[in-house]
Image 1 (cartoon, rainbow, N blue to C red):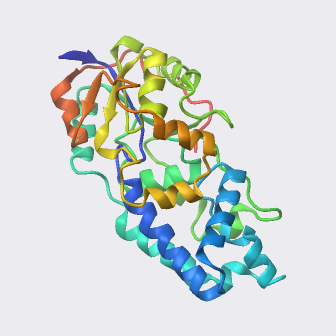
Image 2: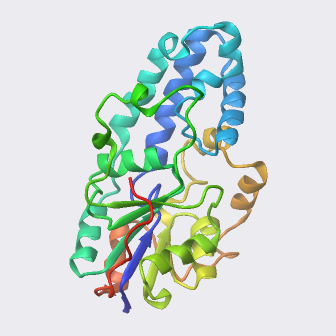
Length: 299
C-alpha cells in the first residue's frame, strides 16, 4: 500500500450527504413559499437560480428577500417575517438530515492518530462550511479547512444583527479555517497547489479525495497528488439532482461539462465504491513533517 502523510478531502457529498440534506430542505421551503405566496413553483425556481448565480452559492441565506416576485407582492415588507414558515421548513429538514456518512469520523480519527495531516477543502462559503463542521463533529478531526470567504451581507445588515448567539459560537475551536481566493473554484489546481505549499505536504505522498470527476479527480491529477474518487457520493445519479440542476449557482456550461464527463474521460487512480473507510484499505498513513505554517486567515 502507498504511504501517505497528508489527506486533503472534499467535504460536501464526500464526508457527509449534502444532497440528502439540501434536497428535502430546499424542496420543503419551496413548497411552503409557493403555497403561502401563490407564486408558481417554477417561477420561484427560476428566480432562485438567478439569485444563486449572482452570489456564487446555492445556499444564499438571504435569497427570499431578493426574489422579484415576492418583493413585488409585498413592497416594503419584511419578507423574512412574512415567510417565516418557509424558512422554518428549511431549517427543520436540514437539522433532521445533516449526518456524516457511516464510518467517516472513525476513519478520520484513525488517519490523524497515525500523525497524518487531514485537511478539508470545500466550495461552500465560510459560514456554511463552519456550521457544518461544528454540527457534524468534525471540529478537531480536520487539522484545517479551506473554503471561500463569506458572501457580502445585504446593505446595512451587520453580522451582529442576524446572529442569535455570541460571535464565538460560530467559530471553530480546534480546526483552523483558511480562505481560498474569491472567484477561485474547483477544478483550479492552483488552489490545491497553494494548500500543499501551506501545509508543507509532498504531492507524491498526499491523497486528495472527492466525489466529482471534474472538480476533484481532474484537479488532483493536474496538481500531481494521489487522486481518489468517492463514487458513493457522486451527485448526477442522486435523487433530487434535477432540482439542484434547476437552481444551482453553476453556469449552464459548468453543468453540461460535469454531466458529459464519465470515468472513461477522467480515469481515477483509486475509487471508494461504498464508504470513506475504504481509505484504510488503500493506504498506510504516516506523520507529516514539518508542521504546517501559521494560517494567514482564520475564523
